[in-house]
Image (tube, rainbow, N blue to C red; front, side, top):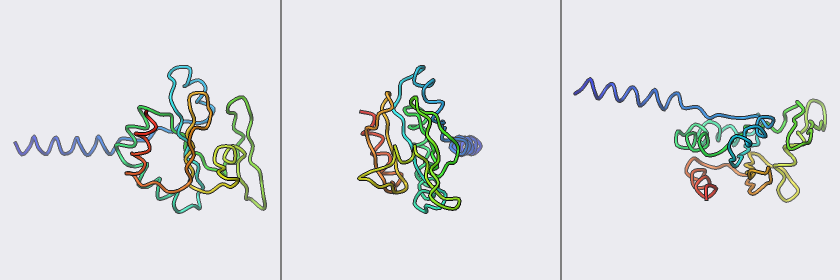
Length: 154
């Protein structure tokens, strides 16, 4: 009985330990939508944003959230300071420099601007036609994010 318990315990740990959030690129979304229509959740962040890093370390490491995002949505992890051109929705978006090695990507501005400003982290939810249906620009704890996912499923 003790061996059975240990076996189940270790399988439980390894199953949750190997559960990884699948992140897609913007370029992959068009072909994925042709296979299966899903809402898209774009997590817009920067490397210097402490709340962004906290969401990555807590919210996006939660096994329930990972399972829900992987099975019900297409998730895009998007650094707003990405310098590569991105083709999305029949348009090419570019990095806009604003100083010496600083700037913001046009697509981050397009998806993350709320009330004429961008703040990080920002969640942008797109419908199956790549139209913005929800934006939110504040840290979300795992519990708050679960509530948001439940509302988005309806």
